[in-house]
Length: 593
Ligand code: SAT
Ligand code: MN
Image 1 (cartoon, rainbow, N blue to C red):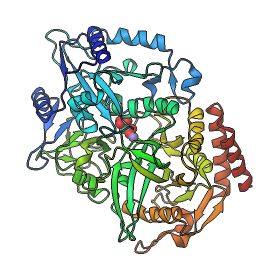
Image 2: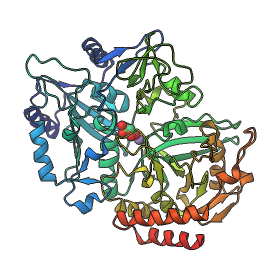
Image 3: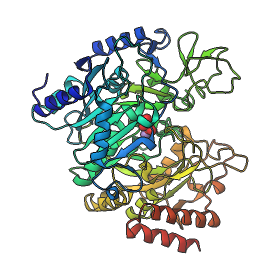
Image 4: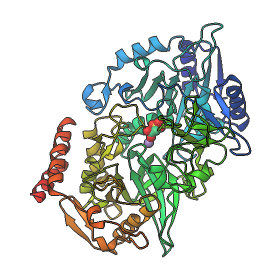
């Protein structure tokens, strides 16, 4: 147990408010995890998968209304609306706190409050932060064991006087005496709140048990709260994967990449190169914390300890390393269940069997209209199980980043790859990112393109306009000769018939090869209104068959004038952006004309 007075007082205060039947301090042990799983299997909240087919693995089915992040119910309760920015839902901190106290009062009756101390970042790293999540969801506890370094080790890291980010979570479904529980308790949409308080860097999440709404170390702490700290302390908390690419010369390049949720970060992070002599190692698949290293370079760590990846579309073809990672000891949520007690989802790489239980627990047969797995079905697994996890993934000092990729799902307009002319122009490319909306958040606009600067639109804890300035200011604390290069990529461009123009997946190494050559000054590029484009001949397409490189690299003047107008409107929507970026937009328009 801890002697940390701040922690003890806070736990006691929250216990008084939430009124759980019991309080349990989690130690993070395997025995604790197994006991919770046994309890959830017994209650019907979880299904134990066939140990011969999927050892140590479990399936959970959420309530059909609680299947993804809820951006409309996510709030930044900054002192002023301006600080939160037009990109966030703002709430008055005093009013929101009062509303939430009302909801939290007695909200854990009939339930257990679990205390989960956790570390984001490698143990003992100067990058790392301690959080403590209080939750009434045993599902959250078992997920946090994969996603973070939790329990006794975190209390040790915290020490008697250390500070932590308080993260309060409740599913918002108290039980009256004698009332039977449901498999996935949660609150109705209008009672859900994912609240962040910049003033004391605290997180209060109510009413949802799913993913980023409930596993508070992830988006809430490691992005929204961390972005606020990073702004104060001159570092960056980013929605980025981190990978190491070794080329045939044995040279290693560390790359991070910002893509919105469900756009292939996990696939790229674990890419199996189709070009001989290349090798990828994974440091992280979702979040990067970037700081100045002692050598003046930009150093990255992955604050997480696991992957919370999208299941549908993941196969031994598209991402063999992820498939091998989840062969054992994995939590599946909202995938389909086979009669043998294994999992199935759309795009798993083999046909559905004659009968399945779908993600809602109903019988499902091939040909049924609705999908068997929810499009935002997930696997939760420890990163250490990944066959291509980097030996450096827990290095306290992080890995030095030389290239930053930016991208999204763009069926038209955006070329396969374009490089920023310099750091500021790279930030400009980050600021104009857009992507089709995916099922990772609840939305009635899935498929529509929205602007998503640095893939941080749902995750920046303050105004995006100030955030873009913070990126520009990074030039002041990274050594000039060690500034990373920026590359805007798009694997998702389609032809007139709607077919993808680029094979993607393992063949994305062909673009990474060009990136590495650019970083090392080994290949020329040609300037364009958008930035530096490759010469078609410099992207290795050997063995690919027909690839329409001209269309993949094309910039249409009309489309880009339209794009520029939409970016201008978006900049205005943000309440203006740094003058340097505005000037770069104007420069792009001038070059187009
Ligand atoms: O936020 S989640 O962790 O639920 C998934 C995502 O959007 O990346
Ligand atoms: Mn993400």
